[in-house]
Image (cartoon, rainbow, N blue to C red; front, side, top):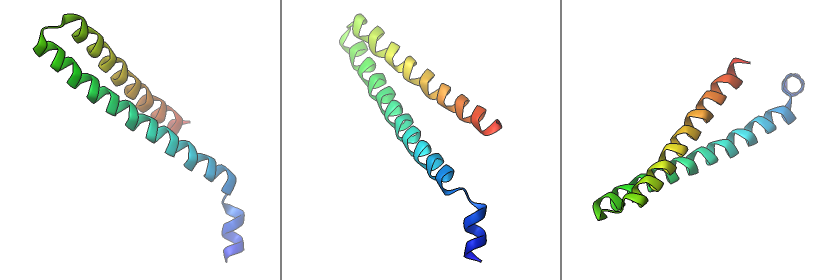
Length: 81
């Protein structure tokens, strides 16, 4: 029975999929963490009255959110293929 399952599963391809999913998942988590930290820094800058800092940290937050949205869209596209 084990031999039949071994022939049905392409272990190399499955390993590649697991590795890619792990790396992309960690990257998305790191980007989300940067987005949260940037958002908090923007709030701190706003409270301090530093408009330049608010714009910079808010822009970084937006870029991170767009990157996460892109990763979600790419994941949906890959699953649809």
